[in-house]
Amino acid sequence: MELTDLIRFAIREDAGDGDHTSLACIPEGTTSKAKLLVKESGVLAGINSAKHIFAEIDPSLKIEWLKKDGDIVQKDDIAFFVEGSVHSILLGERLVLNIMQRMSGIASITRKIVDSLQGTKCKVLDTRKTTPLLRALEKEAVRIGGGTNHRIGLYDMILIKDNHVDYAGGITKALDATRNYLGKTGKNLRIEIETRNLNELAQAIQHGGFHRVMFDNYSLKDLRKGVEMVAGKFETEASGGITPENAYDYAATGVDFISMGCLTHSVKSMDLSLKAC
Image 1: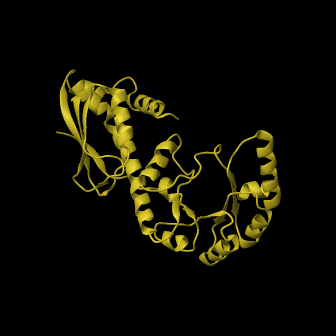
Image 2: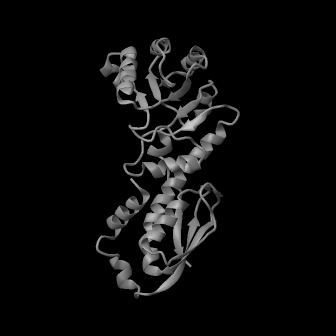
């Protein structure tokens, strides 16, 4: 979904036929100023979205941007000041906070993990375990935090997972069918194959015809063995059971990527507040 469409739907969801609290309490035409107050340390994200939200609600609002996406912030920092119609500021308040808090939480945990992997070649990937309709923003937050996006959806990469393998009748049949499909459709898509054990990995390596192999829920011992078996022929990715606490252990096996659903599916939002000033 385009950001403008998302913003319009979100405003409609929140405002309905009007912000009756503000309309009741505050005379029309009242102007004032507010600040975005940071209430905990982390990586700020969502500034670009906030710009679009305020522009959609009221282009006459004047905003002084003190921080940008990717900045490290501390408690009591001010990210921006917004000045103009109080009704417009209050209409945008919750939408700006909801998006920035979630994006900043994602960017913060991503940066923490990325920093913890220094000394390895491993990159941190997100997954499709995202909030419906917010995927683009959540994946943007991962990039802001220093991570790398995996596929965006079902359409921009072939990822043959365990269910595909089982329904297709095995690793070899799944890969053969995929190559035939791409040949018939003329699509130029990268192929990744998920393996559940070293036996499936051996089958995949013997067949070839893909770009990346995923080690799904491997033990660290088997993961190290799997990296040795691939021997640089394909990109390698570890997935399943990887947390901020054990990420370095997985990265240290020599894999090229680790993918982590926790970046987006269960992240804690950063505490931010929009306050009158």
